[in-house]
Length: 262
Length: 352
Image 1: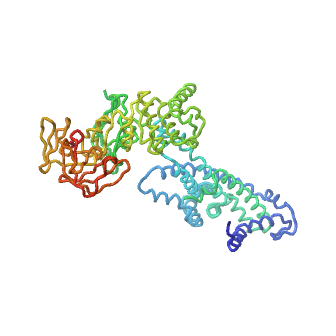
Image 2: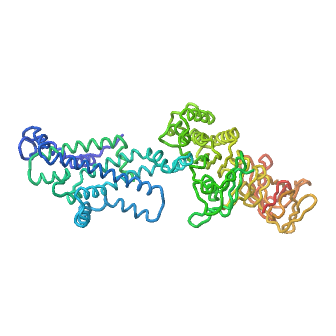
Image 3: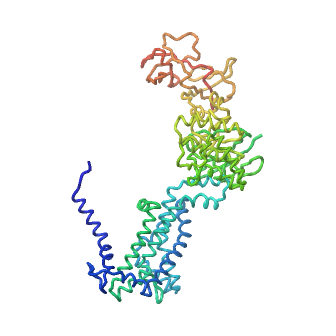
Protein backbone atom coordinates (compact mmCIF):
# COMPACT_ATOMS: atom_id res chain seq x y z
CA UNK A 1 0.00 0.00 0.00
CA UNK A 2 1.50 3.31 -1.03
CA UNK A 3 1.50 6.12 1.49
CA UNK A 4 0.01 9.42 0.45
CA UNK A 5 1.82 12.61 1.32
CA UNK A 6 -0.51 15.55 0.90
CA UNK A 7 2.32 18.02 1.40
CA UNK A 8 4.44 16.39 -1.30
CA UNK A 9 1.46 16.39 -3.66
CA UNK A 10 0.88 20.11 -3.21
CA UNK A 11 4.58 20.82 -3.62
CA UNK A 12 4.75 18.84 -6.86
CA UNK A 13 1.70 20.65 -8.14
CA UNK A 14 3.25 24.03 -7.39
CA UNK A 15 6.45 23.06 -9.19
CA UNK A 16 4.43 22.22 -12.26
CA UNK A 17 2.51 25.47 -12.04
CA UNK A 18 5.78 27.35 -11.67
CA UNK A 19 7.39 25.55 -14.63
CA UNK A 20 4.48 25.30 -17.01
CA UNK A 21 2.35 28.29 -15.99
CA UNK A 22 4.17 30.86 -18.13
CA UNK A 23 4.04 28.54 -21.11
CA UNK A 24 0.30 28.09 -20.69
CA UNK A 25 -0.23 31.85 -20.40
CA UNK A 26 1.91 32.53 -23.49
CA UNK A 27 0.00 29.90 -25.45
CA UNK A 28 -3.36 31.47 -24.56
CA UNK A 29 -2.31 35.03 -25.26
CA UNK A 30 -1.04 34.07 -28.72
CA UNK A 31 -4.66 33.55 -29.80
CA UNK A 32 -5.72 37.05 -28.77
CA UNK A 33 -7.18 39.16 -31.51
CA UNK A 34 -6.28 42.57 -30.09
CA UNK A 35 -2.91 44.27 -30.49
CA UNK A 36 -1.90 43.98 -26.85
CA UNK A 37 -0.74 40.92 -24.92
CA UNK A 38 -3.62 40.07 -22.63
CA UNK A 39 -4.44 37.21 -20.29
CA UNK A 40 -6.97 35.77 -20.35
CA UNK A 41 -7.51 36.56 -24.05
CA UNK A 42 -10.77 38.29 -24.84
CA UNK A 43 -11.22 37.08 -28.37
CA UNK A 44 -9.87 34.33 -30.57
CA UNK A 45 -7.88 34.56 -33.82
CA UNK A 46 -4.86 33.10 -35.61
CA UNK A 47 -3.88 36.48 -37.04
CA UNK A 48 -0.66 36.73 -35.05
CA UNK A 49 0.47 33.35 -36.36
CA UNK A 50 0.01 34.72 -39.83
CA UNK A 51 1.93 37.80 -38.80
CA UNK A 52 5.03 35.72 -38.02
CA UNK A 53 5.47 35.20 -41.72
CA UNK A 54 4.65 38.77 -42.60
CA UNK A 55 7.30 40.33 -40.37
CA UNK A 56 10.27 40.23 -42.72
CA UNK A 57 13.00 39.45 -40.18
CA UNK A 58 11.67 36.27 -38.63
CA UNK A 59 11.84 33.87 -41.54
CA UNK A 60 15.23 35.15 -42.57
CA UNK A 61 16.78 34.95 -39.08
CA UNK A 62 15.14 31.57 -38.60
CA UNK A 63 17.19 30.38 -41.56
CA UNK A 64 20.32 32.00 -40.14
CA UNK A 65 19.74 30.23 -36.83
CA UNK A 66 19.23 26.89 -38.56
CA UNK A 67 22.29 27.22 -40.77
CA UNK A 68 24.36 28.39 -37.85
CA UNK A 69 23.30 25.43 -35.73
CA UNK A 70 23.97 22.97 -38.52
CA UNK A 71 27.36 24.35 -39.49
CA UNK A 72 28.44 24.79 -35.87
CA UNK A 73 27.27 21.28 -35.12
CA UNK A 74 29.33 19.86 -37.95
CA UNK A 75 32.49 21.54 -36.72
CA UNK A 76 31.71 20.66 -33.10
CA UNK A 77 31.33 17.02 -34.16
CA UNK A 78 34.61 17.04 -36.05
CA UNK A 79 36.38 18.35 -32.95
CA UNK A 80 34.17 16.78 -30.29
CA UNK A 81 34.12 13.13 -31.36
CA UNK A 82 37.91 12.76 -31.58
CA UNK A 83 38.26 14.72 -28.33
CA UNK A 84 35.74 12.56 -26.49
CA UNK A 85 37.42 9.47 -27.91
CA UNK A 86 40.87 10.58 -26.76
CA UNK A 87 39.60 11.54 -23.30
CA UNK A 88 38.01 8.12 -22.81
CA UNK A 89 40.50 5.92 -24.59
CA UNK A 90 43.84 7.20 -23.37
CA UNK A 91 45.47 8.22 -20.15
CA UNK A 92 47.73 11.18 -20.53
CA UNK A 93 49.15 14.11 -18.64
CA UNK A 94 46.84 17.10 -18.39
CA UNK A 95 43.76 15.03 -19.19
CA UNK A 96 41.71 16.53 -16.37
CA UNK A 97 42.73 20.04 -17.44
CA UNK A 98 41.78 19.37 -21.04
CA UNK A 99 38.45 17.93 -19.94
CA UNK A 100 37.88 21.07 -17.88
CA UNK A 101 38.66 23.34 -20.79
CA UNK A 102 36.29 21.48 -23.09
CA UNK A 103 33.45 21.64 -20.62
CA UNK A 104 34.13 25.20 -19.41
CA UNK A 105 31.74 26.92 -21.85
CA UNK A 106 28.89 25.35 -19.87
CA UNK A 107 30.23 26.68 -16.58
CA UNK A 108 31.35 30.16 -17.61
CA UNK A 109 28.37 32.55 -17.71
CA UNK A 110 27.23 33.05 -21.29
CA UNK A 111 27.40 36.80 -21.00
CA UNK A 112 31.08 36.64 -20.02
CA UNK A 113 31.77 34.28 -22.89
CA UNK A 114 29.84 36.48 -25.28
CA UNK A 115 31.69 39.59 -24.24
CA UNK A 116 35.06 37.82 -24.53
CA UNK A 117 34.21 36.65 -28.03
CA UNK A 118 33.17 40.17 -28.98
CA UNK A 119 36.40 41.55 -27.61
CA UNK A 120 38.58 39.05 -29.48
CA UNK A 121 36.81 37.94 -32.63
CA UNK A 122 35.12 41.19 -33.58
CA UNK A 123 37.11 44.02 -32.02
CA UNK A 124 40.58 42.54 -32.11
CA UNK A 125 40.64 40.12 -35.07
CA UNK A 126 37.86 41.98 -36.91
CA UNK A 127 36.27 38.73 -38.11
CA UNK A 128 33.18 39.01 -40.30
CA UNK A 129 29.94 38.68 -38.34
CA UNK A 130 29.06 35.25 -39.71
CA UNK A 131 32.51 33.88 -38.87
CA UNK A 132 32.29 35.19 -35.32
CA UNK A 133 28.82 33.71 -34.83
CA UNK A 134 29.97 30.42 -36.31
CA UNK A 135 32.96 30.13 -33.98
CA UNK A 136 30.98 31.30 -30.96
CA UNK A 137 28.22 28.78 -31.52
CA UNK A 138 30.69 25.98 -32.19
CA UNK A 139 32.33 26.69 -28.83
CA UNK A 140 29.07 26.51 -26.90
CA UNK A 141 27.97 23.34 -28.72
CA UNK A 142 31.25 21.53 -28.20
CA UNK A 143 30.80 20.69 -24.50
CA UNK A 144 27.43 19.10 -25.18
CA UNK A 145 28.81 16.96 -27.97
CA UNK A 146 31.79 15.93 -25.82
CA UNK A 147 29.67 15.20 -22.74
CA UNK A 148 27.09 13.09 -24.50
CA UNK A 149 29.54 11.24 -26.75
CA UNK A 150 31.75 10.66 -23.70
CA UNK A 151 28.97 9.03 -21.75
CA UNK A 152 28.40 6.81 -24.76
CA UNK A 153 32.07 5.90 -24.86
CA UNK A 154 32.16 5.28 -21.13
CA UNK A 155 29.99 2.22 -21.75
CA UNK A 156 32.08 1.20 -24.72
CA UNK A 157 34.42 -1.74 -24.24
CA UNK A 158 37.66 -0.78 -25.93
CA UNK A 159 38.84 -4.36 -26.15
CA UNK A 160 36.49 -4.80 -29.11
CA UNK A 161 38.72 -2.31 -30.87
CA UNK A 162 41.64 -4.62 -30.25
CA UNK A 163 39.56 -7.51 -31.48
CA UNK A 164 38.90 -5.69 -34.75
CA UNK A 165 42.57 -4.87 -35.21
CA UNK A 166 43.59 -8.44 -34.49
CA UNK A 167 41.18 -9.55 -37.19
CA UNK A 168 42.99 -7.41 -39.74
CA UNK A 169 41.23 -4.02 -39.61
CA UNK A 170 43.34 -0.86 -39.69
CA UNK A 171 43.08 1.59 -36.80
CA UNK A 172 41.04 4.06 -38.83
CA UNK A 173 38.90 1.30 -40.30
CA UNK A 174 38.28 0.07 -36.76
CA UNK A 175 37.05 3.49 -35.70
CA UNK A 176 34.52 3.67 -38.50
CA UNK A 177 33.43 0.03 -38.50
CA UNK A 178 33.38 -0.70 -34.80
CA UNK A 179 33.57 2.41 -32.61
CA UNK A 180 31.30 4.76 -34.55
CA UNK A 181 28.36 2.36 -34.97
CA UNK A 182 28.39 1.71 -31.22
CA UNK A 183 28.27 5.38 -30.20
CA UNK A 184 25.87 6.37 -32.96
CA UNK A 185 22.94 7.06 -30.64
CA UNK A 186 25.16 9.18 -28.40
CA UNK A 187 26.28 11.23 -31.38
CA UNK A 188 22.72 11.79 -32.57
CA UNK A 189 21.61 12.81 -29.10
CA UNK A 190 24.60 15.13 -28.77
CA UNK A 191 23.76 16.75 -32.09
CA UNK A 192 20.13 17.31 -31.09
CA UNK A 193 21.00 18.81 -27.72
CA UNK A 194 23.73 21.00 -29.18
CA UNK A 195 21.35 22.08 -31.89
CA UNK A 196 18.82 23.28 -29.32
CA UNK A 197 21.52 25.01 -27.30
CA UNK A 198 22.66 26.94 -30.35
CA UNK A 199 19.19 27.58 -31.72
CA UNK A 200 17.95 29.06 -28.44
CA UNK A 201 21.13 30.92 -27.61
CA UNK A 202 20.83 34.59 -26.74
CA UNK A 203 23.82 35.56 -24.62
CA UNK A 204 26.52 34.75 -27.16
CA UNK A 205 24.53 35.84 -30.20
CA UNK A 206 23.60 39.19 -28.73
CA UNK A 207 27.26 40.18 -28.75
CA UNK A 208 28.17 38.59 -32.06
CA UNK A 209 25.30 39.74 -34.26
CA UNK A 210 25.67 43.00 -36.11
CA UNK A 211 24.12 45.20 -38.73
CA UNK A 212 21.96 43.16 -41.09
CA UNK A 213 22.85 39.81 -39.49
CA UNK A 214 20.80 38.37 -36.68
CA UNK A 215 19.60 35.11 -35.24
CA UNK A 216 16.00 34.35 -34.46
CA UNK A 217 16.17 34.84 -30.67
CA UNK A 218 17.92 38.19 -31.15
CA UNK A 219 15.38 39.24 -33.78
CA UNK A 220 12.64 38.37 -31.30
CA UNK A 221 14.27 40.49 -28.59
CA UNK A 222 14.51 43.42 -30.99
CA UNK A 223 10.89 42.97 -32.00
CA UNK A 224 9.69 42.99 -28.40
CA UNK A 225 11.55 46.24 -27.80
CA UNK A 226 9.51 47.91 -30.53
CA UNK A 227 6.12 46.19 -30.51
CA UNK A 228 4.04 44.64 -27.78
CA UNK A 229 1.59 42.64 -29.87
CA UNK A 230 1.06 38.87 -29.51
CA UNK A 231 3.27 37.95 -32.51
CA UNK A 232 6.06 36.97 -30.15
CA UNK A 233 3.66 34.82 -28.17
CA UNK A 234 2.62 33.06 -31.37
CA UNK A 235 6.25 32.57 -32.42
CA UNK A 236 7.10 31.26 -28.94
CA UNK A 237 4.39 28.64 -29.27
CA UNK A 238 5.79 27.56 -32.63
CA UNK A 239 9.29 27.32 -31.14
CA UNK A 240 7.98 25.41 -28.15
CA UNK A 241 6.41 22.88 -30.47
CA UNK A 242 9.64 22.50 -32.44
CA UNK A 243 11.63 22.06 -29.22
CA UNK A 244 9.11 19.58 -27.86
CA UNK A 245 9.34 17.55 -31.06
CA UNK A 246 13.10 17.57 -30.77
CA UNK A 247 13.02 16.36 -27.18
CA UNK A 248 10.49 13.74 -28.15
CA UNK A 249 12.94 12.31 -30.67
CA UNK A 250 15.80 12.42 -28.20
CA UNK A 251 13.65 10.65 -25.64
CA UNK A 252 12.61 8.01 -28.16
CA UNK A 253 16.21 7.51 -29.17
CA UNK A 254 17.89 7.22 -25.78
CA UNK A 255 15.64 8.19 -22.93
CA UNK A 256 16.22 11.42 -21.02
CA UNK A 257 17.98 9.53 -18.27
CA UNK A 258 20.90 9.50 -20.66
CA UNK A 259 21.74 13.08 -19.76
CA UNK A 260 21.28 12.91 -16.05
CA UNK A 261 23.95 10.21 -15.76
CA UNK A 262 27.54 11.27 -15.16
CA UNK B 1 61.52 -26.69 -35.22
CA UNK B 2 59.99 -23.86 -33.37
CA UNK B 3 57.25 -21.78 -34.94
CA UNK B 4 58.10 -18.61 -33.10
CA UNK B 5 60.70 -17.32 -30.69
CA UNK B 6 60.82 -14.43 -28.28
CA UNK B 7 64.46 -13.44 -27.97
CA UNK B 8 65.79 -11.45 -25.00
CA UNK B 9 62.63 -9.37 -24.92
CA UNK B 10 62.25 -6.53 -22.45
CA UNK B 11 58.93 -4.83 -21.80
CA UNK B 12 58.61 -1.96 -19.36
CA UNK B 13 55.60 -0.08 -18.14
CA UNK B 14 56.29 3.33 -16.64
CA UNK B 15 59.97 2.47 -16.11
CA UNK B 16 59.12 -0.76 -14.31
CA UNK B 17 60.29 -3.79 -16.23
CA UNK B 18 57.56 -6.39 -16.58
CA UNK B 19 59.59 -8.71 -18.77
CA UNK B 20 63.38 -8.62 -18.66
CA UNK B 21 65.47 -10.52 -21.23
CA UNK B 22 62.56 -12.88 -21.71
CA UNK B 23 62.90 -15.96 -23.91
CA UNK B 24 60.25 -18.34 -25.17
CA UNK B 25 60.07 -20.78 -28.07
CA UNK B 26 56.99 -22.65 -29.16
CA UNK B 27 56.80 -25.49 -31.64
CA UNK B 28 54.39 -25.90 -34.54
CA UNK B 29 51.00 -27.33 -33.54
CA UNK B 30 51.60 -27.12 -29.81
CA UNK B 31 49.24 -25.74 -27.21
CA UNK B 32 51.35 -23.96 -24.63
CA UNK B 33 49.88 -22.38 -21.51
CA UNK B 34 51.33 -19.49 -19.61
CA UNK B 35 50.39 -20.01 -15.99
CA UNK B 36 51.14 -17.87 -12.99
CA UNK B 37 49.75 -15.53 -10.35
CA UNK B 38 48.44 -12.13 -11.39
CA UNK B 39 51.20 -9.70 -12.19
CA UNK B 40 53.61 -12.40 -13.33
CA UNK B 41 53.74 -11.09 -16.90
CA UNK B 42 51.73 -13.79 -18.62
CA UNK B 43 49.20 -11.45 -20.19
CA UNK B 44 51.98 -9.05 -21.13
CA UNK B 45 53.73 -11.88 -22.94
CA UNK B 46 50.55 -12.78 -24.80
CA UNK B 47 49.86 -9.19 -25.80
CA UNK B 48 53.42 -8.85 -26.94
CA UNK B 49 53.04 -11.89 -29.19
CA UNK B 50 49.75 -10.47 -30.52
CA UNK B 51 51.43 -7.16 -31.24
CA UNK B 52 49.30 -5.02 -28.92
CA UNK B 53 52.49 -4.18 -27.03
CA UNK B 54 55.86 -3.19 -28.33
CA UNK B 55 58.99 -4.48 -26.68
CA UNK B 56 61.72 -2.06 -25.68
CA UNK B 57 64.40 -4.54 -26.61
CA UNK B 58 64.65 -7.96 -28.15
CA UNK B 59 63.15 -9.71 -31.10
CA UNK B 60 60.07 -11.63 -32.01
CA UNK B 61 60.78 -14.18 -34.72
CA UNK B 62 57.93 -15.93 -36.47
CA UNK B 63 58.81 -18.67 -38.95
CA UNK B 64 62.33 -17.24 -38.93
CA UNK B 65 61.05 -13.83 -40.02
CA UNK B 66 61.43 -10.76 -37.84
CA UNK B 67 57.92 -9.87 -36.70
CA UNK B 68 59.00 -7.37 -34.02
CA UNK B 69 57.68 -4.36 -35.91
CA UNK B 70 54.83 -6.00 -37.81
CA UNK B 71 51.57 -4.30 -36.75
CA UNK B 72 48.76 -6.31 -35.16
CA UNK B 73 46.50 -6.23 -38.21
CA UNK B 74 49.20 -7.66 -40.47
CA UNK B 75 50.09 -10.60 -38.23
CA UNK B 76 47.20 -12.94 -38.95
CA UNK B 77 46.96 -14.16 -35.37
CA UNK B 78 43.64 -14.98 -33.78
CA UNK B 79 43.05 -13.47 -30.35
CA UNK B 80 40.34 -14.59 -27.94
CA UNK B 81 39.62 -12.10 -25.15
CA UNK B 82 38.63 -12.71 -21.57
CA UNK B 83 35.46 -10.62 -21.97
CA UNK B 84 34.77 -12.06 -25.47
CA UNK B 85 34.97 -8.58 -27.09
CA UNK B 86 32.23 -9.35 -29.60
CA UNK B 87 30.96 -6.51 -31.77
CA UNK B 88 27.64 -5.68 -30.13
CA UNK B 89 26.15 -4.07 -33.23
CA UNK B 90 26.69 -7.10 -35.44
CA UNK B 91 25.00 -10.48 -35.67
CA UNK B 92 26.91 -13.65 -34.93
CA UNK B 93 27.38 -14.14 -38.66
CA UNK B 94 28.78 -10.64 -39.16
CA UNK B 95 30.99 -10.95 -36.12
CA UNK B 96 32.56 -14.08 -37.49
CA UNK B 97 32.70 -12.70 -41.04
CA UNK B 98 34.50 -9.52 -39.92
CA UNK B 99 38.03 -10.86 -40.37
CA UNK B 100 37.22 -12.29 -43.80
CA UNK B 101 35.70 -9.00 -44.96
CA UNK B 102 38.93 -7.23 -43.98
CA UNK B 103 40.71 -9.73 -46.21
CA UNK B 104 38.39 -9.00 -49.14
CA UNK B 105 37.26 -12.59 -49.41
CA UNK B 106 34.43 -13.11 -51.90
CA UNK B 107 30.88 -13.11 -50.59
CA UNK B 108 30.16 -16.75 -51.43
CA UNK B 109 33.39 -17.87 -49.84
CA UNK B 110 32.69 -15.83 -46.70
CA UNK B 111 29.32 -17.51 -46.28
CA UNK B 112 30.91 -20.91 -46.77
CA UNK B 113 33.72 -20.42 -44.34
CA UNK B 114 31.63 -18.71 -41.65
CA UNK B 115 29.04 -21.49 -41.69
CA UNK B 116 31.75 -24.13 -41.54
CA UNK B 117 33.46 -22.57 -38.55
CA UNK B 118 30.13 -21.98 -36.78
CA UNK B 119 29.50 -25.66 -37.25
CA UNK B 120 32.85 -26.51 -35.67
CA UNK B 121 32.03 -24.25 -32.74
CA UNK B 122 28.59 -25.90 -32.34
CA UNK B 123 26.81 -22.65 -33.15
CA UNK B 124 24.66 -23.73 -36.06
CA UNK B 125 21.43 -21.76 -36.21
CA UNK B 126 22.73 -18.80 -34.23
CA UNK B 127 23.84 -16.78 -37.29
CA UNK B 128 21.21 -14.06 -37.01
CA UNK B 129 21.41 -13.54 -33.25
CA UNK B 130 23.04 -10.52 -31.69
CA UNK B 131 25.65 -11.01 -28.95
CA UNK B 132 23.30 -9.59 -26.30
CA UNK B 133 21.00 -12.58 -26.92
CA UNK B 134 23.70 -15.18 -26.24
CA UNK B 135 24.80 -16.91 -23.04
CA UNK B 136 28.36 -16.57 -21.80
CA UNK B 137 29.44 -19.91 -23.22
CA UNK B 138 27.88 -19.14 -26.60
CA UNK B 139 29.57 -15.73 -26.69
CA UNK B 140 32.91 -17.33 -26.04
CA UNK B 141 32.30 -19.87 -28.81
CA UNK B 142 31.52 -17.00 -31.19
CA UNK B 143 34.74 -15.30 -30.12
CA UNK B 144 36.67 -18.51 -30.83
CA UNK B 145 34.91 -19.00 -34.18
CA UNK B 146 35.71 -15.41 -35.10
CA UNK B 147 39.38 -15.97 -34.36
CA UNK B 148 39.44 -19.32 -36.17
CA UNK B 149 37.75 -18.31 -39.39
CA UNK B 150 40.72 -16.26 -40.60
CA UNK B 151 42.80 -19.45 -40.45
CA UNK B 152 45.29 -17.81 -38.12
CA UNK B 153 48.95 -18.76 -38.03
CA UNK B 154 48.73 -18.61 -34.27
CA UNK B 155 45.82 -18.65 -31.84
CA UNK B 156 46.05 -16.63 -28.62
CA UNK B 157 43.76 -17.03 -25.62
CA UNK B 158 43.68 -14.52 -22.77
CA UNK B 159 41.95 -16.19 -19.80
CA UNK B 160 39.03 -17.10 -22.03
CA UNK B 161 37.08 -19.05 -19.45
CA UNK B 162 37.39 -16.93 -16.33
CA UNK B 163 33.99 -15.26 -16.85
CA UNK B 164 32.14 -18.56 -17.12
CA UNK B 165 30.70 -20.66 -14.34
CA UNK B 166 32.50 -23.77 -13.18
CA UNK B 167 30.60 -26.42 -15.15
CA UNK B 168 30.76 -24.49 -18.38
CA UNK B 169 34.46 -23.93 -17.88
CA UNK B 170 35.13 -27.62 -17.91
CA UNK B 171 33.02 -28.15 -21.05
CA UNK B 172 34.58 -25.21 -22.84
CA UNK B 173 38.14 -26.25 -22.17
CA UNK B 174 37.41 -29.66 -23.62
CA UNK B 175 35.92 -27.88 -26.66
CA UNK B 176 38.94 -25.62 -27.04
CA UNK B 177 41.30 -28.57 -26.87
CA UNK B 178 39.18 -30.53 -29.40
CA UNK B 179 39.07 -27.67 -31.89
CA UNK B 180 42.75 -26.92 -31.46
CA UNK B 181 43.72 -30.52 -32.11
CA UNK B 182 41.27 -30.93 -34.98
CA UNK B 183 42.72 -27.94 -36.78
CA UNK B 184 46.28 -28.33 -35.53
CA UNK B 185 46.66 -24.64 -34.78
CA UNK B 186 49.58 -23.56 -32.64
CA UNK B 187 48.09 -21.96 -29.56
CA UNK B 188 49.25 -19.87 -26.63
CA UNK B 189 46.86 -19.94 -23.71
CA UNK B 190 47.00 -17.69 -20.67
CA UNK B 191 45.29 -18.61 -17.43
CA UNK B 192 45.72 -18.44 -13.70
CA UNK B 193 43.77 -21.67 -13.27
CA UNK B 194 46.16 -24.56 -12.80
CA UNK B 195 43.71 -27.35 -13.54
CA UNK B 196 42.57 -25.62 -16.72
CA UNK B 197 46.13 -25.27 -18.01
CA UNK B 198 47.18 -28.78 -17.11
CA UNK B 199 44.12 -30.34 -18.71
CA UNK B 200 44.44 -28.77 -22.14
CA UNK B 201 48.12 -28.08 -22.68
CA UNK B 202 50.94 -29.89 -24.40
CA UNK B 203 53.30 -27.74 -22.38
CA UNK B 204 52.88 -25.37 -19.48
CA UNK B 205 55.14 -22.43 -18.70
CA UNK B 206 54.97 -21.42 -15.06
CA UNK B 207 55.74 -17.73 -14.82
CA UNK B 208 56.77 -15.60 -11.88
CA UNK B 209 57.85 -11.96 -11.84
CA UNK B 210 58.48 -11.81 -15.57
CA UNK B 211 60.46 -15.00 -15.97
CA UNK B 212 59.57 -18.56 -16.86
CA UNK B 213 60.40 -20.72 -13.89
CA UNK B 214 59.65 -23.95 -15.70
CA UNK B 215 58.47 -24.99 -19.16
CA UNK B 216 57.53 -28.66 -19.39
CA UNK B 217 54.66 -30.98 -20.08
CA UNK B 218 51.99 -30.91 -17.36
CA UNK B 219 52.86 -34.32 -15.85
CA UNK B 220 56.49 -33.38 -15.41
CA UNK B 221 55.61 -30.12 -13.74
CA UNK B 222 53.16 -31.87 -11.48
CA UNK B 223 55.68 -34.51 -10.38
CA UNK B 224 58.99 -32.72 -10.74
CA UNK B 225 58.76 -29.00 -10.10
CA UNK B 226 62.09 -27.36 -10.72
CA UNK B 227 61.96 -24.44 -8.33
CA UNK B 228 60.46 -23.67 -4.98
CA UNK B 229 58.06 -21.20 -6.58
CA UNK B 230 56.71 -23.79 -9.01
CA UNK B 231 56.40 -26.36 -6.24
CA UNK B 232 54.52 -23.91 -4.05
CA UNK B 233 52.29 -22.82 -6.94
CA UNK B 234 51.18 -26.34 -7.77
CA UNK B 235 50.43 -27.41 -4.24
CA UNK B 236 53.61 -28.60 -2.57
CA UNK B 237 52.77 -26.97 0.73
CA UNK B 238 55.59 -28.40 2.82
CA UNK B 239 59.19 -27.31 2.44
CA UNK B 240 62.34 -28.51 4.18
CA UNK B 241 65.53 -26.47 3.92
CA UNK B 242 68.33 -29.07 3.89
CA UNK B 243 71.90 -28.34 5.00
CA UNK B 244 73.62 -30.78 2.65
CA UNK B 245 73.04 -33.58 0.14
CA UNK B 246 75.06 -36.46 -1.27
CA UNK B 247 74.47 -39.19 -3.83
CA UNK B 248 73.87 -42.67 -2.42
CA UNK B 249 73.07 -45.92 -4.19
CA UNK B 250 69.38 -45.80 -3.37
CA UNK B 251 68.94 -42.07 -4.04
CA UNK B 252 70.00 -38.75 -2.62
CA UNK B 253 70.62 -38.49 1.08
CA UNK B 254 69.65 -35.02 2.23
CA UNK B 255 70.48 -33.92 5.75
CA UNK B 256 69.00 -31.34 8.05
CA UNK B 257 69.84 -30.98 11.76
CA UNK B 258 71.34 -34.46 11.91
CA UNK B 259 68.29 -36.09 10.36
CA UNK B 260 68.88 -37.68 6.96
CA UNK B 261 66.06 -38.24 4.48
CA UNK B 262 66.28 -40.31 1.32
CA UNK B 263 65.05 -38.73 -1.89
CA UNK B 264 64.53 -40.86 -4.95
CA UNK B 265 65.02 -38.34 -7.71
CA UNK B 266 67.13 -38.18 -10.85
CA UNK B 267 66.90 -34.76 -12.43
CA UNK B 268 68.00 -32.22 -9.87
CA UNK B 269 71.71 -31.79 -9.12
CA UNK B 270 71.86 -28.82 -6.82
CA UNK B 271 68.56 -28.16 -5.04
CA UNK B 272 68.59 -28.11 -1.28
CA UNK B 273 64.92 -27.51 -0.66
CA UNK B 274 62.75 -30.55 -0.15
CA UNK B 275 59.09 -30.22 -1.16
CA UNK B 276 56.13 -32.52 -0.61
CA UNK B 277 52.36 -32.30 -0.93
CA UNK B 278 50.08 -32.60 2.13
CA UNK B 279 48.33 -35.54 0.40
CA UNK B 280 51.57 -37.52 0.08
CA UNK B 281 52.54 -37.49 3.74
CA UNK B 282 51.43 -40.29 6.08
CA UNK B 283 50.80 -40.13 9.81
CA UNK B 284 50.87 -42.96 12.36
CA UNK B 285 50.30 -42.90 16.11
CA UNK B 286 53.72 -43.26 17.77
CA UNK B 287 52.94 -46.67 19.25
CA UNK B 288 51.29 -48.07 16.11
CA UNK B 289 53.83 -47.14 13.41
CA UNK B 290 54.79 -50.07 11.14
CA UNK B 291 58.48 -50.99 10.70
CA UNK B 292 58.47 -50.15 7.00
CA UNK B 293 57.96 -46.40 7.37
CA UNK B 294 60.23 -44.46 5.02
CA UNK B 295 61.97 -41.32 6.22
CA UNK B 296 60.28 -41.44 9.60
CA UNK B 297 60.23 -38.21 11.61
CA UNK B 298 58.78 -37.98 15.07
CA UNK B 299 56.32 -35.20 15.83
CA UNK B 300 53.22 -33.98 17.59
CA UNK B 301 49.79 -33.03 16.24
CA UNK B 302 49.12 -29.33 16.82
CA UNK B 303 45.80 -28.77 15.12
CA UNK B 304 43.45 -31.17 13.43
CA UNK B 305 40.78 -29.88 11.05
CA UNK B 306 37.98 -31.92 9.56
CA UNK B 307 37.72 -31.30 5.80
CA UNK B 308 34.98 -33.82 4.98
CA UNK B 309 36.93 -36.04 2.65
CA UNK B 310 39.93 -36.07 4.93
CA UNK B 311 41.44 -34.64 8.08
CA UNK B 312 44.06 -31.96 7.86
CA UNK B 313 46.71 -31.95 10.55
CA UNK B 314 49.36 -29.45 11.46
CA UNK B 315 52.28 -31.53 12.73
CA UNK B 316 55.25 -30.07 14.56
CA UNK B 317 58.56 -31.91 14.19
CA UNK B 318 62.19 -31.14 14.89
CA UNK B 319 62.73 -30.23 11.21
CA UNK B 320 59.76 -27.92 10.91
CA UNK B 321 56.01 -27.87 10.77
CA UNK B 322 54.09 -29.95 8.21
CA UNK B 323 50.59 -29.87 6.81
CA UNK B 324 49.24 -33.37 6.29
CA UNK B 325 46.01 -34.52 4.68
CA UNK B 326 45.05 -37.90 5.99
CA UNK B 327 42.22 -40.22 5.14
CA UNK B 328 39.06 -39.53 7.07
CA UNK B 329 38.34 -43.25 7.24
CA UNK B 330 41.27 -43.83 9.55
CA UNK B 331 40.76 -43.14 13.25
CA UNK B 332 41.28 -39.40 13.73
CA UNK B 333 44.31 -38.24 15.67
CA UNK B 334 43.82 -35.96 18.63
CA UNK B 335 45.46 -32.63 19.24
CA UNK B 336 48.73 -33.08 21.13
CA UNK B 337 49.11 -36.73 20.15
CA UNK B 338 52.64 -38.02 19.52
CA UNK B 339 52.96 -39.30 15.95
CA UNK B 340 55.36 -40.65 13.36
CA UNK B 341 55.43 -38.71 10.12
CA UNK B 342 56.29 -40.64 6.97
CA UNK B 343 57.87 -38.71 4.09
CA UNK B 344 57.77 -41.18 1.17
CA UNK B 345 61.04 -41.02 -0.75
CA UNK B 346 59.27 -41.25 -4.12
CA UNK B 347 57.08 -38.24 -3.39
CA UNK B 348 59.54 -35.81 -1.89
CA UNK B 349 61.41 -33.75 -4.48
CA UNK B 350 64.39 -31.46 -4.29
CA UNK B 351 63.93 -28.05 -5.88
CA UNK B 352 66.12 -25.02 -6.49
